[in-house]
Structures are given as C-alpha cells and as structure tokens.
Amino acid sequence: MTDARLLAAALRNPASTTALDGEGWTALLTMARAEQLAGTLAWRLAGLPLPAEVQDWLADAQAGAVQARRTALWEAEMARRVLAPLGTPLIMLKGTAYAAAGLMAGQGRQIGDLDLLVSRDQLAAVERALLGGGWEWVKPDAYDDHYYRTWMHELPPLIHRERDRMIDVHHTILPPTARPSPDAAALVASAEPLGNGLSILSHADMVVHAAAHLLADGDLAGGLRNLWDVHCLLTEFGGEGVDERAVCHGLLPQVMRAGRQAHALFGTEVPESWRKWDSLDRLIQRRVLARDGWGRAVRPATRAAFYVRSHWLRMPPGLLARHLWIKWRRGRA
Amino acid sequence: MKVRVGPASFRVGSAWSQPLAQLRALYADYPPGDSVPDFTVRLEPTRPWRRWVRPSVAIAGDYMLPEAAPLPLAHALLAAEMAMNLQVALGWRRHLLLHAAAVEKDGRALVMTGESGAGKSTLAAMLMRRGWRLLGDEFALVDLHNGSLHPFPRPISLKNDSIAALAGEGRWGPELVGTPKGTIRHLVPDALALAGMNRQAMPAMLLFPRYGFAPATRAVPASEAFVRLTAASTNYANLGEPGFRALTRLVREVPTVAVDYPDGASALAMVDEIWG
Image 1 (cartoon, chains in turn blue, red):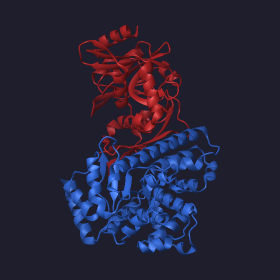
Image 2 (cartoon, each protein chain N blue to C red):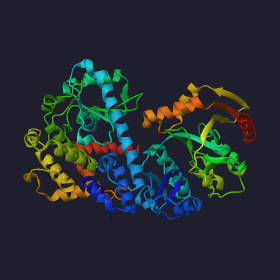
Image 3 (spheres, one colour):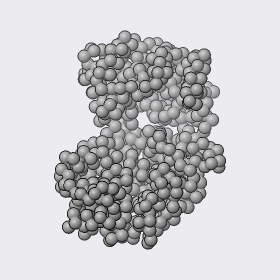
Image 4 (tube, chains in turn brown, blue):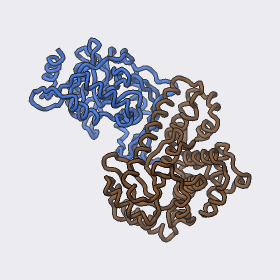
C-alpha cells in the first residue's frame, strides 16, 4: 500500500522525483494537495527539469501560494489597524508569522486562518475591538461558545463579514485543560516585534509551539505539514536554546519527539539525545503518512486512535465525558 | 478513467464500476487524459457499508465542499460531472472562470451568463444545433493575457423540458430521473466543438439571458456587467490582479446586453437580431 512517504521523500530530496513516471507524479501531486503541501512542494521542486504537465501543475500551486501569502499578510494588517489603539503586543502565530518574517517554513505554505496571540488580560478588549471592527461569531451556539471560553486557549473563531476570513485569538498555545501548561506570559515577554506593529514568537518559542501544535493539540490531521514546519524551523534556527525553552513550557517531550519525527522523515539535524524512538513514535509516523496516491485518508483505525487521544490530551476524563455527551446528544437532535 | 476537456485533464476513480462505464461512453469522442492529470475526482461511499447497502456516492477529489450532499448510485454520473466542475471551479488558475455558456461563429464568441435556470445550457445547445461552435455550457475560460476564450466543451447538462426540446441527434448520456434538479440528461457536444477544443476565440458579445419573461433587451453598462461577472466567477478573487485586469478588459471591450425571453424560439430570434 502506498502512503505519503513518497511526498516526504520529495520534500526531503527533490532530486528523488526524477525517477517518477506519470503514475508516480500523479500520486505525489495528489497527496501534496490533500496534505496542503502543494505550494511547498512547488517551492522545493523549483528549477528542476520536470515534465511539462508537472511544471504547469507546480506553477499553479506556486501562484496559489503567492496569493495565499498576500491575502494572509493583508488580513494581519487589517487586524493590526483595528487592534493598534489597544497598545498591546499582537503576536502572529503559525503560517502568517512565517510568511511575515520571511522564514523557510513560510515558503509556498498554504495559510488559512489568522492566528494571533495576545496576553490574557487583553482578551476582552481585543474581542470588543474586533466585534466593533467588522468581525462576527462563526458559531452562534451557546454550548460551543461556553466550551471555547471555559476550556480552550482561544476565543471562539471570528469571521470578517466582508472579507470572509477567520481570526483565532489565542491567549496561550495549548488549552488550559491540557496537561502541559506553557508559560503564556513568557511567550508574550520574549516575542519579537517586526517593526510593523506586529510581532512573532522568539525562535525557540516558535519551535516549541510548532511541536505542541503537532503533538499535543489535535489528532495529527495535517500532521505532515505541521511536521514540515518543525523541520524548517529547526533547520533555519538550529536547536540552540530550544531545550531550555521547552522545559520552561513543560513541553520538552513533545519537542524531542517532533524533532526525531522530522529527523526520520526529512533528515532534520537534531541533537543525538532527541533521537531515541519509543513505542508511540512508529504509530505517529504511520498516522502522519496516512494518505494514498488518490488523496484518500487511509489507516482508519490509526486515525481513530489518534482522534480519541486528541480529546484525551486536551481534557481530563470527567470533562471529556461531559463534552462528548453534550456533542453526541446535539448530534442526534 | 482519464479524460481531457479543453485545457484541463481529469482522473476519475470510483468505488463502483457502473459510473466509470457511463463516463467512458459519454467521453468516448474526447481525447484521453494526460499522463499527469490536473485534477483527481473520487466517487466513494459515504460510509464503508454504503458501498453495498443503499449505495450512496460522496463527491470527493482534490477540492471538496464539506456541505456537498451525497447522491444515490443511480445518479453517480451526475456526481462525477458535479465533481469535475467543482475541481475546475475551485482549483483552476490558468484562466479567469466565468459561470457562463459560450458559442462561437466566424471567430467571434457570444458569452451567456446568468443564474441557474436562466437557460444558458439550453440556449447554447440550440445554437450549437444551428451551426455555432460550442465552447462550453458551464464555464467560459478567459485568457489572462490576451482576453480570448478557451473552449471547455464538457457534456451539456440539460434539464427537464429542455431534454425533449433538443431530442434527436448526438451522443446522449443516460436519463437521470429524480435528481435534486429534476430529470437531467447530458448531451455530448458535436464534432465541430470537440475538434476545436484547443482553438480559442475572441469574445464579441456578453448576454445576460433571463427565461420566462416577455421579450425585452437592454444594453448593460460596463460597471454593472463587471459587478455581475465578479459574482459569476468562481476564481476572480483568488487570481488577484490578473483576474481584475482580465475582467475589466472584457467588460470594456465587449458590449453587454440583458435579454428577457419567454421561450427558446424567441430567444434564438433575439440572438440573431442582436448579433446582426
């Protein structure tokens, strides 16, 4: 059975694609689209002598990524204009941050929502300013609203009514109910202003966040893209200072695991002490690569196991039971 | 199965053999798809057991809409056609896409756009029968550099009364009864359209037809045409500046007419008169 190892290999070593026939290319491009890595692949393969049909496909993906970047940076600027009067640091996270800072992780990257981190005591003011500036709630449901506000690390998602773009406003990088508790104040204190009224996390915090996002906050859907982020950040910044920062946020195990997973698939340079695989690593790799040449999600049992795990990580058992009960009852209504 | 339509090539996979057999018959006169297609379409069961028990076809592929409703296996051909359109609507970047039908005569193209039910497909099929070259009944592909239209002659999707109105010659797909849009049947474009699927044409006139009204024509200003066409394009915003340039050029250079018509015969007469 094919899996996304083909895609990981092409990202790691673009020259490996020269051996592909039409069927191989079709599988590679299809899984790249399904994993939101089309633009990234186009960036990696740029300049190689490739079949004409592949060149056309990659040119589209590249143009799509350019447009995604432009739209994402514009959206960040729109939010900045509305939030600037608050005088509080506005820290971009993930794709928008990588694009704004010109990082390798942002090259060709698909960017969806605008993710912002603000300090918790500013959350209410930020929410008021956004609601006054043209954003509105996506989920008008009372339980969902309560769920986000009580247990999540972000406001319920907001969408701009004219531009149709979502914003996620975070006050930390993991749900407060999750077992690791990152030091949100330290994230904000170490953030680096870009000089345009917006900031990004410090390099070490960026690595820690990418690892946390990959391994401690979700079911590993989109995991290959998130792992590629980890690879790019570690490659560009090196691992220096990451250990101490990870310890400070209680996320050293996640950072080490993300590092060795990236090392295994992309050949990322990581410290020797991070590389020892444990029983979960093989399963994580199986999950991250669970995509076939038709773009289908494969390995349903593995995916289901990580789905259950994602809830388990995010909430203590009693709270989880209550949450699933409410969701289930509503699903039947 | 693989097929190429104009500039776009597709790969269609299915959990069932019947839709693929229907597609092969419908696309028998089309060129085979490229070895590396632009888009992948998948027809798959909504749940594993729905492959056999009350088979239910989910529309999937490179680009998907979470709210797309599944169809019964009897309508799988429609699911495939919808899925192929969806890939183009959401994924195509090499042209400005307008939700419009287009036909060509003497190198000059007539573009007809309007809401679903405005009669685009029916009018395009009728004009094809009268010797016009069909460029497409679903999307008009506007070149981003020179403003020409690239043909995209997919099988024409005819509904309800239009099927009888055009009955007769040509290659037809099976009759699909009881779909969400009533009875649907696909008519394969004629040999002229298929042979010319790589030959572009310059747009000469834009029509906004409306079916079911007393005959009336009205010249549409470029500003109104622009706004209506931004709404009729699935990739205008996504293309950024090149899309804006292509669309402003189109509405500036091509006269636009709104046409209300009560029936097919009067529509044809009105087109003849406006076209000159």
